[in-house]
Image (cartoon, rainbow, N blue to C red; front, side, top):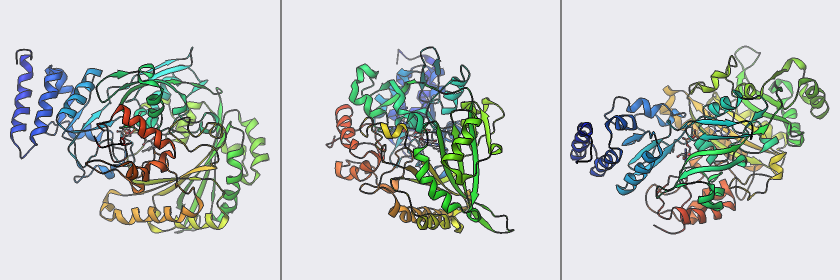
Length: 534
Ligand code: FDA
């Protein structure tokens, strides 16, 4: 004990008492905390880094990054402790101690995982929350940036916009999404047709592996560097930071929204969109959002289809282009607004556009309870098929349901399927995703909403990719398959979900995992398993 500072002792006493009171914490939990506190060995650091269940701030730190509140109920399994490292050595100590004492580690950046896997586990676990790793360094001269995993997309976009209006980054539209999970699963946004995915623009990374080694692109090698750019988080290591290439955009871009509902011939327009959207010039992105809304007839509901677009240019160039290529939309100048690219992110994220400071607000997107699923569509859906899914939005379980159709083509058509783990490239007309939400008071009836989205997904089966039925990793869906909660998961079992997310790239991901983490230290319900049992 000589090497410990005197002030650490009260903390250690708490740890020892907790470890001895088996009713409160299992023995290994106390051992883990003792191990970690010995490694940190500084009382002021310990109080800023370790949040145990009896800490008054435990709940607020846990809840601060829970986006899907389906996983924030009294019945949700809670971590033994939340570790919020201030420096790299704290992460290395957390890996060492959780490995030594058999606790599962869940890595959390922005906490937007659809199934809550970054902060929920059925086996004893601790959360490593990267909330203090959020630096963004933008170098406009070389058109690159370093961004730490705990930063949000909003913080990255703000950092770019603070320096220039003519550089951007092709990632998601929700400013509160965390960099760590988003980049690990691919990451797409409104620049997807022009530039592809976020992962396509990562040129270096800093990662800590299961042995606590700090690696960069050169020292990790090209196989592991390939795997972390889309092969999913919580599998290969903890990515601390990413070096990204920024992309050019005009200082002024144009956005528009055109809403059509069931009474406005929407089926035919949506049917046409499928033939047009993926073939438009790469500078034009027109996605589709479908929701139930109030009809103009009192007391009635209808289905609204919103065509929302980003054009990398001015309104005067956009209007004739859309009138020529997609006249059915009836686009008028009053539907359009010119703005900077960073403002267009807020427009798409439905965030208020008063000031770009909103990009820094971690609470700007309301937290909701939801279940979501995704698909890829390679052939246009016939009008009868469209009518069928639009009518499902009129069912009572769909009050808080939505469908998003993201056009592909452009850059996505050019990148080979095995370039990165994300395989859904050429030949896709669009990505479809479905989401259903409900109110907290309705939690007891959550089953009926989940049944609705499963029925919706079954209905779509006829019209979407098959063998495998592809899915987007970042729209995590445990319905499509899962690893064993504890114990070994075979290649065959993981293939059930693995080929849906990664197609043939799954095989290479398993090889990389077997090489870099054969003991399967980094794992969750949908992490890539090593080839043989550790
Ligand atoms: P979170 O912290 O929950 O992590 C997700 C997974 O990655 C977990 O398994 C976690 O353990 C692991 N992980 C996190 N940080 C890691 C790190 N540093 N190293 C290793 N593993 C790590 N997607 C998209 O492509 N485009 C979009 O526009 C949107 N929009 C969107 C809006 C909203 C409201 C939500 C809830 C989600 C999206 N998404 C999205 C999906 C999003 O990309 C996906 O949920 C990401 O995994 C979220 O990353 P976070 O870091 O926030 O999640």
